[in-house]
Length: 80
Image 1 (cartoon, rainbow, N blue to C red):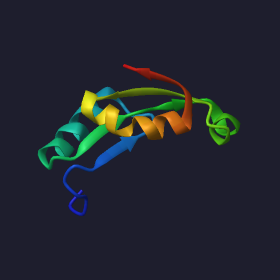
Image 2: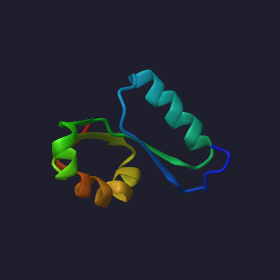
Image 3: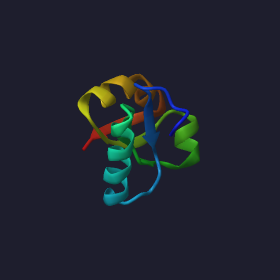
């Protein structure tokens, strides 16, 4: 966290609890670092083909910032 630049965006695509995600987002926010929780589904073959499903959550400005990356990774993106 200490080496990240202000305005950076962290994207977590793992299975974590909502409580962990919220507390982690708060820590990053204190340092003006954006945070998005974006778990994925689809397996390695779909990932290699850019066809995974992404469940994205975060602040609207953060989701807009990472949208090109999500579009390249996934076929279905659900903002939750």
